[in-house]
Length: 87
Image 1 (tube, helix red, strand yellow):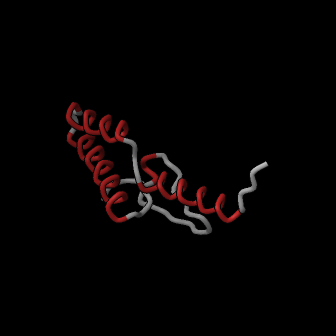
Image 2 (image 1 turned 60 degrees about the vertical axis):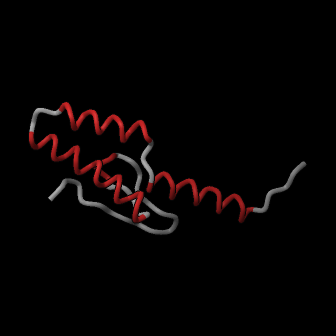
Image 3 (image 1 turned 120 degrees about the horizontal axis):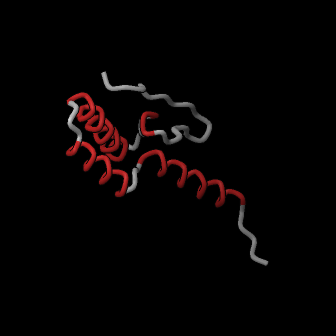
């Protein structure tokens, strides 16, 4: 039987959790982009644009995506929060 040290497992889980908070899938970005282009409401376009901006900032700066994306936003041993709506 193969043995794996617990530190390797902890680091792998940590990396996956962080990545899930920083990077949205291409399908999510594409769907939001299409929705923004099709949206008729100026406020709706603004909100969708803000979501796309949140995704870009999260990926670039390696910070958690906003809770408005309905994804968990918590690091290992830390608590984070984001505004619920654009200001």
